[in-house]
Image (cartoon, rainbow, N blue to C red; front, side, top):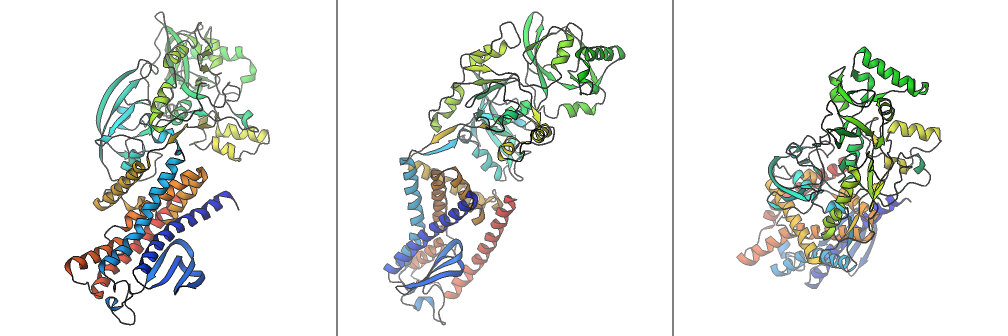
Length: 626
């Protein structure tokens, strides 16, 4: 039996346990107040095993998603009114019925609080940094945020008029049928430590790559981009294998940009740009310009002949190789003489499809008279050497090798993320790339050897040539973000830093209760579609995944589900415990009983609605699985 199947079985047993303790609460109190319990069922459907104990039929059924306790008098028996059955549910005082109804949910609520306390005493759970940060890791190019100049590294401080505590609020807000969102934050320059506050009212939209139906403002959380090491067998085929990167290194800079997330790094890699060091008016600056196929650039005969001369000078071994250059005319000394046009105007969009945004200064165009002195950090003396360096697409990375293995509390994680990098050292190191002052390291920062990214097809070709199993789990993990055959990657497994999340149990309890209240109120108001709720299949999937993370994560989800089960059952809905409590309170206060016919009329429609709702959320769960 594989671990996934084992985890699924354990998850189903866990859910059955929560229902068992719920029903056990009903059972114990019902017996104590003198009610006759007929059946205690663990699960639904046809019984697998039954036995009798103290006049109660106990049974275990095939569908272990729930269970029930059947108390005498919950419905008519041989035409006798439920109220007339002395040892039945409705034959007892309203206060006894309230005690029986309330104890089931109460058991689930107490269980949740006990588990939250146990997790706290065990030191809390380890969660990814990105779950708690308010730092933006990437901004969608089609979003209003991007248009308003918000970029990776900027922060969100308020969202929807409330303090912003994490990007899960963007998801929960996106699931609701929201339209406009008030957002506040700071635009941050980490090299100067300057912060500029911003405040916008943004229109939510369907972001590409996000589950259909979830609207967002286009921001993605920051995360530590930490290299997790090479696979012992397949690592040597990685483009980054000879770059000097080491396990535990945090990527902090790539081709002119500070890196705030793995997604941002992937976007930078796939821009297809070249990082140039140029001299302009006596000053050394860095720019990032497109690297395009030579055949896409429009040029006259003399210009094309110059490229032919360069090609011959490089030798005949590149005769069949596609050649690339920047869209600028460069003389023999490496000075910009002008700009090339594209043969086809559609190529402008094609060659810039991965360039989601432009960084002021870094992505400014070259000017006539600019002198190129380095390409991707490699010194060049003339046009021929520039042409030679542009044969291959390369990415420059800087890593921080000072990442501590000490545990970080979630409350200190933003500080650790920012202060974990010496920004003045990073600026000095990167400003000197391609100059006489260039050094491979500054403090704990290291400039790696330029990496030549590969496409999915190139990786497949290498693996087939070397008879390596391309379909292995390691390779799949390296290519899981591939969007097209041209998509590039550096072949480095990246992980986020884990932080310790351990709020006091009462605070965690309160937070979950607030989330449940927000969900229920959003359902009632219509701002939340029920399709985003999870039924038994979805809940089993979540618990199964949490078991794969660790026992404390699984315990948390068990407590979360138990608390949901307890609170939802207290809602004043006729088929739930809360409905029975309301009926008993009505009788207690007014002294009048509700007739069995009236009870049937009230309860039956809700029974039908519950069945329809169960089928609906199960269908949504299954559709999300595929």
